[in-house]
Image (spheres, rainbow over the protein chains, first blue to last red):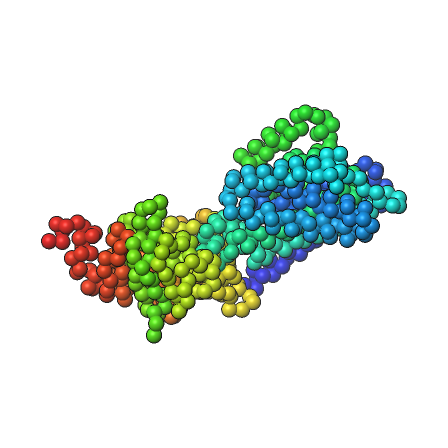
Length: 327
Length: 242
């Protein structure tokens, strides 16, 4: 038993060391004179990572596939934009982004969580589209023509970069904690079999509402961080269906239900997406569709699954060569 | 002393069809009460209603002096009523240990902050220690049955609802499970036990309730039930009873 717990401790230390290294590398990278374009791409990837990690908590860990995360992203974006225009400190504005999205998650979750599987997914598409239409026609937010953020002072890309880095680190810590916690166990149980979970004392509706709220808060903050950077937002963008799909795609590419997967997916998507859009303006969505089918058919654990297989493969070769050299 | 569980005039319609009609019975604290009846008699429906996963059309259920007719299953578990499933429903991608941990955390709660020892004890108690870290999906039928029971026991029920824990088991495995049920009762847990296997019922139960076509046919100690012509008729048909 003691051996098992120290083994667990060593495993945790390796992981903390890995994540810490990544954080430090990303933290000092801008000091090495990387191009402003790379800084921008990394900023975008980090914002996507926040949303990707958030979606994974509901979609990957709890198994509730939502196509409606653009609602939280968009509400967060508009809330931050209006807050900043109203003279709030950006961090206060992001807090409001999180709160507004959290509130929305309850209103959306209460009716839709009574539905299961594909029916839940379809309902979230409906909600998301309804919100987009409303926002397109709402006059005090500028309707379809969008909303502009007038922030005083010079534009400092690094400030935005570190804000995104900070919030994505927070998102990863929350995700790692959930994967180890009692709360996380109940979420996995709901994913595996909702009724059986209820039969040993888990309240499935409460578990789903809580994780939805947490995911929405993080996604709202991501929207807020993006809006402040972009300085201009419009409903077809932040509330667009493609935003919902992007947020769902990243964790699935990376590996749903894991801590590292959504981060890997966010990096891949954030760094590659723009090139893809530039190279195949019409076809890039088709590529994602094809990628999604390949992943779901052959490796539901995404990139983390491939990495796991690769590691197994290398370990086998290693062992074989070790025994060969002994023999 | 009032009974731990009392079911009064419980009725359940599924789309106009009566699955249960006016069923009443009581379970005393510390008993193993068997619930038998031919296929379609309403045993599992009755079970699901008591466990809170289905709500009845009419009638009342009193548990420990409280009216709990329309409680939800997670509320039932926290109050001390937990069920197993006839067809096992493990959380497949999670390990055996994690399956049990959930029951421990979300049922009536672990004995102390650290759950490691308690989970290990429960797993050893049902004979699953050797597969504790395997994914539940990889367990054989017998072990899945044990896991179903272990996970439910981890919730520390005062009233355990066992749904056919012996089906699909070999003779030896069945005897082990029956021994386990007796030990559980020995620790003060009341058991309501649905079973098809007559020998299992006769060798463990203090009291047996017989259902037929959604109605209570009779009840009594196992020996009396075994020789009751109405029960034999329900199971084997009229001529066999003659």
